[in-house]
Length: 336
Image 1: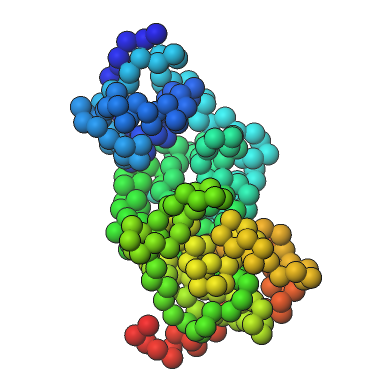
Image 2: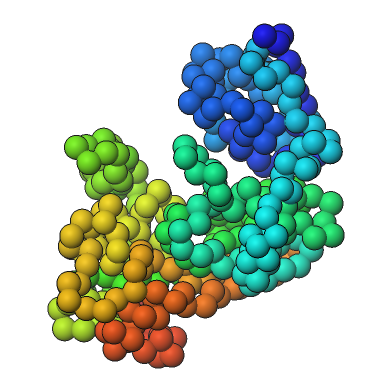
């Protein structure tokens, strides 16, 4: 058993979450054990109690209590572990780059690939980021998240300063995120706003994000119906104005139009029996516009994923008409 250690946060670890820092430095330490040590105050940052999501800054000192595997990975050993990724995964990830410059990388996340690791999740984007370092001095880092089965735009920072700026942009809502969803049923309005507070609440089917007006946090989503097929299904444009966990999925289900393929929030209602649809969750991070760390605005759009196109064809939706349709609807109410 080791003694208590004080480990300094490196220059390239700025804005890294504390739990991710431990996962990189002490890979054998389970998340559950880390949470327990945090609650007890055994793990501290600059002498203060913090939570797992605390964002570290270069030069801070992390108090590490005695562990079974006492030595943190450092230097070359840490770099080898972070950059360990199969040739096939590296190739596929590089083919998904939508934008690359000195400060920012944007990739098109595929369905079924988790952004971060967790219990039972060994293959994830965070573990492959060494493949996207190229000639940069630092390994790219995540600045926001998408669900495992959500596709589309995922933004990465290429150095600590960019990570700080981009994280701030997401935190203060100076980003404009556009999602597309295909839902079962049709909203009562052609365009509108869903303003329903959300909270993580346990239930018989496990923990879910649910509408709760007493303990829920404010959650707002603007939407437009781009196309619909009778009362069966609709193709929606969604703009989340807040960033709650599973917000779009919970909001769509709450107004009676669950996203196709979302069994967690829609159950059997999140399907259209008898139709030849694409398999999987029909939620796509279509585009993003945000302040670039070096100035100006960065705007990136992700292509429509294969399962989305399959369903669009089956329902007779025309993806080429999306831009014109949204502009037409929004122009009807300039203040919306």
